[in-house]
Length: 152
Image (cartoon, rainbow, N blue to C red; front, side, top):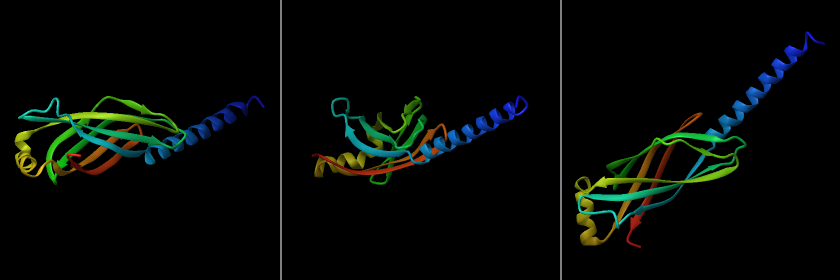
Protein backbone atom coordinates (compact mmCIF):
# COMPACT_ATOMS: atom_id res chain seq x y z
CA UNK A 1 0.00 0.00 0.00
CA UNK A 2 2.89 2.37 0.77
CA UNK A 3 4.15 2.01 -2.79
CA UNK A 4 0.74 2.94 -4.22
CA UNK A 5 0.12 5.95 -1.96
CA UNK A 6 2.33 8.41 -3.95
CA UNK A 7 0.69 7.24 -7.17
CA UNK A 8 -2.81 7.72 -5.73
CA UNK A 9 -1.93 11.17 -4.36
CA UNK A 10 -0.44 12.21 -7.70
CA UNK A 11 -3.57 11.02 -9.54
CA UNK A 12 -5.84 12.89 -7.10
CA UNK A 13 -3.72 16.04 -7.43
CA UNK A 14 -3.84 15.82 -11.23
CA UNK A 15 -7.61 15.33 -11.20
CA UNK A 16 -8.04 18.33 -8.91
CA UNK A 17 -5.83 20.47 -11.18
CA UNK A 18 -7.85 19.50 -14.27
CA UNK A 19 -11.13 20.24 -12.44
CA UNK A 20 -9.80 23.62 -11.21
CA UNK A 21 -8.59 24.67 -14.66
CA UNK A 22 -11.91 23.71 -16.25
CA UNK A 23 -13.79 25.85 -13.71
CA UNK A 24 -11.47 28.81 -14.31
CA UNK A 25 -11.82 28.45 -18.09
CA UNK A 26 -15.62 28.38 -17.81
CA UNK A 27 -15.56 31.48 -15.59
CA UNK A 28 -13.42 33.41 -18.06
CA UNK A 29 -15.48 32.33 -21.06
CA UNK A 30 -18.81 33.13 -19.41
CA UNK A 31 -17.86 36.45 -17.81
CA UNK A 32 -20.56 38.97 -18.68
CA UNK A 33 -20.12 42.72 -19.18
CA UNK A 34 -23.20 44.86 -18.75
CA UNK A 35 -22.77 48.56 -19.50
CA UNK A 36 -24.52 50.57 -16.82
CA UNK A 37 -23.89 54.14 -17.83
CA UNK A 38 -21.95 56.61 -19.91
CA UNK A 39 -21.97 60.03 -18.30
CA UNK A 40 -20.43 63.36 -19.20
CA UNK A 41 -18.88 65.16 -16.24
CA UNK A 42 -20.08 68.69 -17.01
CA UNK A 43 -18.41 70.10 -13.88
CA UNK A 44 -14.90 69.13 -15.09
CA UNK A 45 -15.51 69.51 -18.83
CA UNK A 46 -14.47 72.70 -20.52
CA UNK A 47 -13.81 74.25 -23.90
CA UNK A 48 -10.85 72.03 -24.82
CA UNK A 49 -11.60 68.72 -23.10
CA UNK A 50 -14.72 66.72 -22.24
CA UNK A 51 -14.49 64.34 -19.29
CA UNK A 52 -16.75 61.32 -19.10
CA UNK A 53 -17.02 58.02 -17.30
CA UNK A 54 -18.16 54.58 -18.33
CA UNK A 55 -19.60 52.26 -15.69
CA UNK A 56 -19.59 48.50 -16.31
CA UNK A 57 -20.96 45.63 -14.26
CA UNK A 58 -18.98 42.41 -14.52
CA UNK A 59 -20.97 39.27 -13.69
CA UNK A 60 -19.40 35.92 -12.90
CA UNK A 61 -21.95 33.09 -12.59
CA UNK A 62 -19.29 30.38 -12.31
CA UNK A 63 -17.72 28.82 -9.21
CA UNK A 64 -14.23 30.28 -9.78
CA UNK A 65 -12.90 33.83 -9.38
CA UNK A 66 -11.84 35.81 -12.45
CA UNK A 67 -8.86 38.11 -12.12
CA UNK A 68 -8.97 41.14 -14.42
CA UNK A 69 -5.48 42.24 -15.45
CA UNK A 70 -6.32 45.16 -17.71
CA UNK A 71 -8.92 46.91 -19.81
CA UNK A 72 -8.27 48.39 -23.24
CA UNK A 73 -11.30 49.99 -24.90
CA UNK A 74 -11.77 52.49 -27.71
CA UNK A 75 -14.51 55.14 -27.76
CA UNK A 76 -16.32 56.22 -30.91
CA UNK A 77 -18.89 58.99 -31.29
CA UNK A 78 -21.10 58.65 -34.34
CA UNK A 79 -18.58 56.08 -35.66
CA UNK A 80 -15.60 58.46 -35.32
CA UNK A 81 -12.73 57.54 -32.99
CA UNK A 82 -12.44 59.96 -30.07
CA UNK A 83 -10.28 58.27 -27.44
CA UNK A 84 -9.03 55.30 -25.49
CA UNK A 85 -10.28 53.95 -22.17
CA UNK A 86 -7.46 52.08 -20.50
CA UNK A 87 -7.25 50.62 -17.00
CA UNK A 88 -4.14 48.71 -15.99
CA UNK A 89 -5.15 48.18 -12.37
CA UNK A 90 -5.92 44.55 -11.53
CA UNK A 91 -9.07 43.56 -9.68
CA UNK A 92 -11.12 40.46 -8.97
CA UNK A 93 -14.65 39.36 -9.90
CA UNK A 94 -15.66 36.86 -7.21
CA UNK A 95 -17.17 33.48 -7.90
CA UNK A 96 -20.95 33.70 -8.29
CA UNK A 97 -20.68 37.47 -7.82
CA UNK A 98 -20.58 40.87 -9.49
CA UNK A 99 -18.20 43.81 -9.55
CA UNK A 100 -19.03 47.31 -10.75
CA UNK A 101 -16.20 49.37 -12.18
CA UNK A 102 -16.01 52.99 -13.26
CA UNK A 103 -13.59 53.97 -15.98
CA UNK A 104 -12.83 57.70 -16.20
CA UNK A 105 -11.45 59.22 -19.38
CA UNK A 106 -11.56 62.36 -21.45
CA UNK A 107 -11.57 63.42 -25.07
CA UNK A 108 -10.22 66.46 -26.82
CA UNK A 109 -12.91 68.72 -28.14
CA UNK A 110 -10.78 69.37 -31.21
CA UNK A 111 -11.37 65.79 -32.34
CA UNK A 112 -15.12 66.19 -32.01
CA UNK A 113 -15.69 69.73 -33.26
CA UNK A 114 -18.60 68.60 -35.43
CA UNK A 115 -20.31 67.04 -32.40
CA UNK A 116 -19.97 70.27 -30.43
CA UNK A 117 -21.45 72.30 -33.28
CA UNK A 118 -24.31 69.80 -33.51
CA UNK A 119 -24.86 70.00 -29.71
CA UNK A 120 -25.09 73.78 -29.90
CA UNK A 121 -27.59 73.75 -32.74
CA UNK A 122 -29.61 70.59 -32.04
CA UNK A 123 -28.85 69.77 -28.41
CA UNK A 124 -26.85 66.82 -27.11
CA UNK A 125 -27.84 63.82 -29.20
CA UNK A 126 -25.26 61.31 -30.45
CA UNK A 127 -24.41 57.64 -30.50
CA UNK A 128 -21.42 56.43 -28.47
CA UNK A 129 -19.78 53.07 -29.07
CA UNK A 130 -17.26 51.47 -26.72
CA UNK A 131 -15.39 48.41 -27.95
CA UNK A 132 -12.17 46.61 -27.25
CA UNK A 133 -11.06 43.90 -24.86
CA UNK A 134 -10.53 42.96 -21.24
CA UNK A 135 -7.54 40.82 -20.29
CA UNK A 136 -8.23 38.21 -17.62
CA UNK A 137 -6.03 35.59 -16.01
CA UNK A 138 -7.47 33.14 -18.54
CA UNK A 139 -7.36 35.15 -21.74
CA UNK A 140 -9.00 38.02 -23.54
CA UNK A 141 -12.73 38.89 -23.51
CA UNK A 142 -14.15 41.18 -26.21
CA UNK A 143 -16.45 44.11 -25.30
CA UNK A 144 -18.81 45.99 -27.62
CA UNK A 145 -21.40 48.47 -26.30
CA UNK A 146 -23.41 51.21 -27.99
CA UNK A 147 -25.56 53.83 -26.28
CA UNK A 148 -27.55 56.80 -27.47
CA UNK A 149 -26.63 59.89 -25.40
CA UNK A 150 -29.05 62.79 -25.13
CA UNK A 151 -29.78 65.73 -22.83
CA UNK A 152 -32.31 63.84 -20.72
